[in-house]
Image (tube, rainbow, N blue to C red):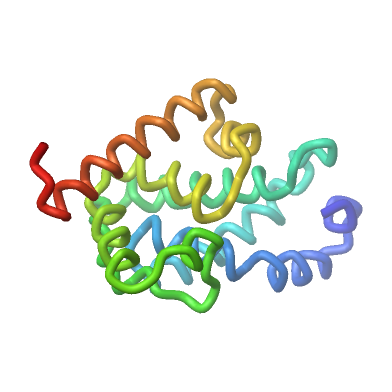
Length: 172
């Protein structure tokens, strides 16, 4: 990123190669549309080029990158009504740490539960659980305080737990 800030635009290619799979996976799961995610990824990296001077090298690059990705998705949704993603659209070649722990029917149930959540909850869970951002980096990506990020994660997990129970037929 420092090279890109220094005017070496070829450095954008290295950033793209390194981070494209994670950004695409995040956007595909967030939007529920792999084709839209393809377009949004391109927009994310164009924005990195455009706003490179705004990046603070003392901050975490991934948090900044995912903030750009979520803002790009938000712009997309302002233009077009968001839809709940179909779990089949979430399959990718870049499994997260959470993906490797959950297999089979549980994975399908998790995908259905996540797809049923509101956008804001899904976004937080994808950034924290699937992309592995720390609460600090999540706060940077969301543009809120670390405490607010923790609260959002807690609420999203609670909503996911309720949705999981509903899908499992637990009516307690």
